[in-house]
Length: 122
Image 1 (spheres, rainbow, N blue to C red):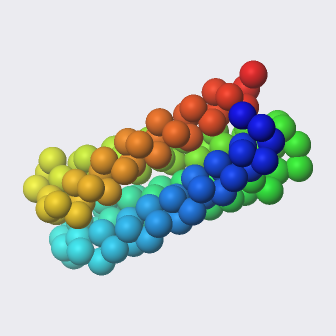
Image 2 (cartoon, rainbow, N blue to C red; image 1 turned 60 degrees about the horizontal axis):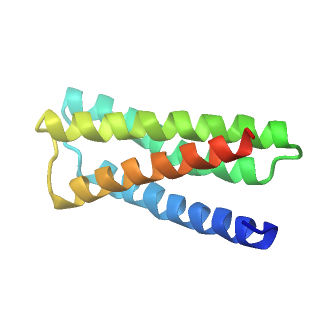
C-alpha cells in the first residue's frame, strides 16, 4: 500500500471510529438506570469513546513506537467495548437491532485495528 493510500485508510478508520463512539453514546442513553445498567453504562461509555480517542492520539504519534503504543491501547479498548456490548445484550439489559449492529461493528473495528497494529509491528 502506498503511503498516500495508507494515510487515507487511517483517516477512513478514524472517521468510522468516530461514528462508532457516537453510536456507543446513543446506546448509553438507552440503558436503564438500574444498578446493573449503571455499571455497564459507565464502563461501555469509557471504553467505547476511548477507542476513538486513542486512535486519534496514535495518528498524531511522534514516532513509530508512540503510534504503536497508542494503537495498542485502542485495540485493548475495542476488545473491552465489544465485551461490554456483548454483556449488555446477553444479560437482557438492552438487546435490540441497533445494539446488535453496533456489536457487529465492534467486531469489525477490532479486526481492523488489530490488523493495523500487526502491520505497524513489522
